[in-house]
Image (tube, one colour):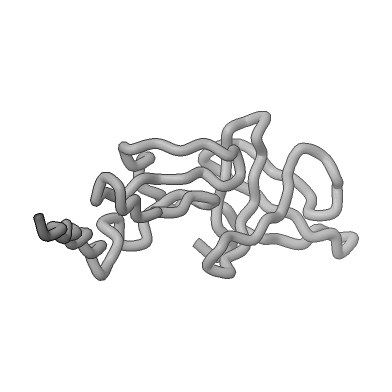
Length: 116
């Protein structure tokens, strides 16, 4: 009997544009999974993944300011929070895979992009 060649099923191609259109929060990435032909979401900072997208990123009211001693700090009036860039406390400045800087405070569960 001649051997039958198995035809491979073509893999679905990922959509050209991620569904979230850049509204992912800082530190998150949309990743194509060829096995399920679906997007999943990876929080690269926390090293977790989810099939459901995280809540869309909303620009807060964070402002970069300078005090009387030329110390640079960030402030959010709506949250009633501020921190100095060089304080070395709970806030960290990180770079996402798209080259955007953001600030993260895991203890408070807060993240924001610089400049929006």
